[in-house]
Amino acid sequence: MARLFVAIQPPAALVADLLRIVPAQHGIRPTMAAQLHLTLRFLGEQDDPTAVRIERVLSEVAAPSVVLQVKGVGRFRGRQGAILWAGLEASAPMQALVDAITAALEREGIPPERRRFWPHLTLARCRPEVPEHVLRDWLAARRALSLPACTIDRFVLFESVLDRQGARHVARAVYPLVANGPDRCPQR
Image (cartoon, rainbow, N blue to C red):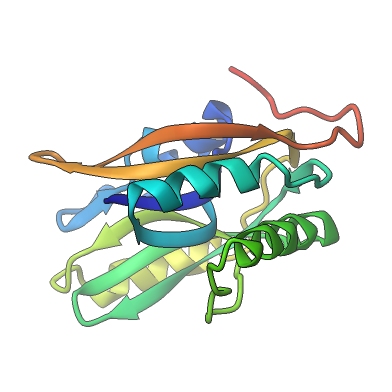
């Protein structure tokens, strides 16, 4: 069984900029740079024949390139603490990509996601003992965060592999998007 998800990997320069703003506080664990991604579709555990069919059907997705524009930050609260995230501006091309992926997967008998697509990048996980004022201060200081936009020209089918160090995301397949402009993401 393979635990799969479809995502966009932001460029290294954007990842570095985002991880620099995560508070350095005991109990706050930043996302590892190699694992920072925009989930387009979570697929969960899939048997090998289904995983192969998913790889094939995703190769048929035709969608325009996607612009990533960071807009603000926020948090999700949960029983086990909080998650800090950077928001991404929703766009017609991003939604078109999500819709094309959903339609392709439905043709293979994989039902659509129940949750609404909400573009964000998970920056850190916070344990419950992190003081509330630390999180509130961070949110207030970065609520209007805006970083330069960049164009993404591919999406990836990842497999989440669990080992002693935790989850490791391995690219099973990379799929191109149709270029729709000269803007590229800065590569440092």
